[in-house]
Figure 1: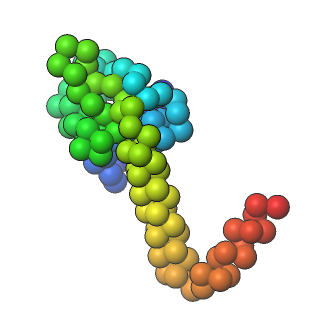
Figure 2: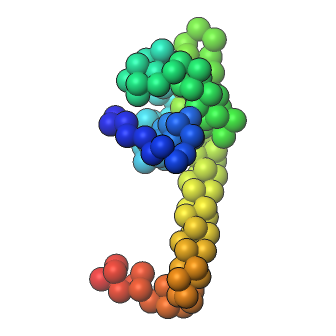
Length: 119
């Protein structure tokens, strides 16, 4: 995974978003072991406390389950993954609609633009 951080967002949130995306895209399969805190910190070049906070956030989202001796694994509950996928899509739609409204684009016009881009 390539790690690039935006200085305008907390690093742990960016790590969460990156790992959540990898889980939702299936790069990490249900039941697959996630990186350890130490491995994630080293790979991403971040503080271990930041890595721990990010991995704990995935547990809070029910995307990861912690097994004391086996580390953290991606949830095997498809409904948890689907719930997070729907939340991510809903958040994206809300952001796009808000941004379009800020520049004077009506939802209908935005929908037409999206359909045109799809062609």
